[in-house]
Length: 483
Image: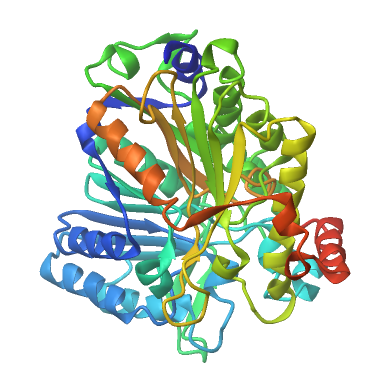
């Protein structure tokens, strides 16, 4: 039952064979944080962290990095965040000002801080679009937490809520091959990013564009920047182990192991033509599930911000699978709940999109095959309140109890993910019973706080979406942004 998936996947993305025991699944934000700190403390040669941002008050994480660097003179640290998010508060304390002192203490030969700036927000657009919403034009969104020859793939950023009460997913891969693949992709993105330098200015840092970068600045020459980036990034995400459709002997399915991990990259903003791998891979997997022989299969799909790309909605509802579940955040578990300004409209916007999805289920007569669940654990910003940020896909084959296929990574599977942001992840295909059980457990525990919702629920007065939310969604799309 796996061959129809893998035969084509082998031609679509780089892959590595390994034992299922090399993949550990973490459960809670605390597990994630403690595991990350433990790995940092024992680091021997390299730490590389790719995230949207590091919370400006994350002193403990910075101290952990400092102690590791002081204890081991051979250790090198590299961090890449998004430039818009990482400098938003400047000249007040920001992610950039938090990280710059690491360079002062340890030197630029041991510590490198990079910030990626979208080539999609330049000139008048950059000048006039408010900082709180300018992220809609593209972000560095990859979450790669690499230490030596291990890497955590996640959707979580590095800030207090992601360490305490913001539910996400976290897979630890103990694999030199997987870690090195993402290290190379990471290096590619850093060579297309600004360099943070300590500064005596009020902000505490400056952003510089090194002459050694792989392209000119995206703010000065965005077209040339994309042109140079296209060849570089394509070479880092294309399948290297396929020649004329035949795998080389030292990689892929010819080597030992019960699990294949396909490396996914969605960096559409950096490539023309776009040869990203995530959307084509998910498309292939879901199209394969439409075949009649998969009528006994089931899938679970989750995205905290529920706005799947239209093509994915269509594919999900076209599978032959039954007993399928979609999990999304309740408005009370949405990170933007009661947020100030335009972003405070976002929970209602996602409510509207979830309602449209339920309408699509009904129109396709898939009511008995697909259930939508909203995740809620208390209320955001109230004592004991959590937010939900998990994203992923699990597929259980006919006559099996647990998933054999799962996708983990940073993508929210939205139109924006497939046009504006930089995303990285992995598709796991396994025959290992232990890993399948762990994936099944993960799928179950993410539903412990999730309850089904119907069109009747959305018809209630408190769930109705006002006109200003619809207008805001229209304006964002009109000026080239995306949710």
